[in-house]
Length: 150
Image (cartoon, rainbow, N blue to C red; front, side, top):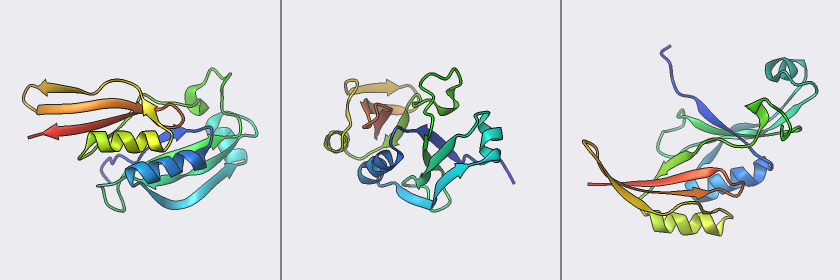
């Protein structure tokens, strides 16, 4: 089997609330079953003793039923004081291409997100014009909204 992109993982303080945000704002859909991992195999995988990992995968729009997912988990120990990044909340950003940036921006704010940066439009040589803005989800992770112009 050739290499295939599978998922991105977001560690959340409240996985259910963050899943609801991505379902409501970006039309992500619950994928497979809820996860409740614990035991020796999780201890060995994470190099953490007695940890419990709960959450689920969400399919992302535009990629069909076997496309990549967003995996949103909460650890019983969210690693606030841990030097290992495995279970610490956060990532750089996740991007969604949208038809109407302002409409999606308002929806993000309605569901508990907020502005992070300002809307900009840049001309990318050889690619075209791109409008984009950074926002935050309800747990302050960065979400990029982007729209390519013809």
